Image (cartoon, rainbow, N blue to C red; front, side, top):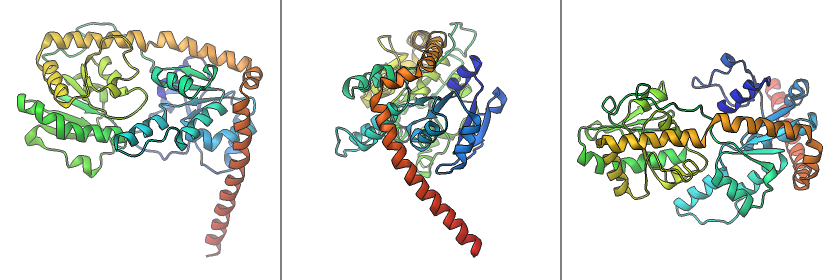
Length: 391
């Protein structure tokens, strides 16, 4: 999201960031990069006045839930604004995989899939972060290609210099980093502790496994075991610093979707990794991985040991990571294409929408149903305020 905001700023867009989320100490400082922030609320008619006065030419929804809440209000108050959905990842795909992993019965088309794909149709363009998800939407769900835009992570080119990053000798230990409210990360850490780390620690008893991530629950905290070299570190003040100083990143994700930022960040930091097919999905294409991809715990541990101990293999893996970033996630390549697409849709919005009758139909019915639901909730809220004032 921050990369997208910076891209818009770079192209002379004036950006307002409106969110119903509660403020936290971990929020990005948007004011420092010239972005005005506003607090909004769901089912609140004051949003109508806010968006009407703002009159944006483009509105970006951060995931489909925001489009469900605010899309109909934007369409009503600012019908000429281009509506963009930033999917981040396909939520229904992640949830389906999680259900499969936990042994729950798989449904071919979940209710979540219906909601998310309906949101894609209602928007003028949806940003898809993974080529795998692009293929899924266009082949299995038959979403028109013109409604989708492939926009992966946007990174500056890495200049391969030995002096820019810590050397093999200057680094030590293994790292996993990720938000501990995210179910795939929680499962990965538990799997790491129970199945993979004992195999590594048996061979390398002087090494440590460092787990970083905000919002760790007591379940994660209880995995802290210094005697076995397994350390729960909490939130990293600077993710780049701790990743750069680690020799190998271990990411045993067993379900999930989208692109895994922890793995591209490791590549930027020159830190080779061992991950699963889910972890690597959509990242390297046909290029060799920056380390090893395996779903087998014993192979995973063996690859981790090799990367940690063999300098030559480690250096090859590090350079593979640089090649992946430069070839697959070049800001210089993708940014102009996205801006050109924005201009193209803005200039031909009427024709673009005329070609998307399904989206027009879904917006019509969504507006009707959401309008009356919202009005009901507003009335309940106002009634509760009156009751409180009487008391």
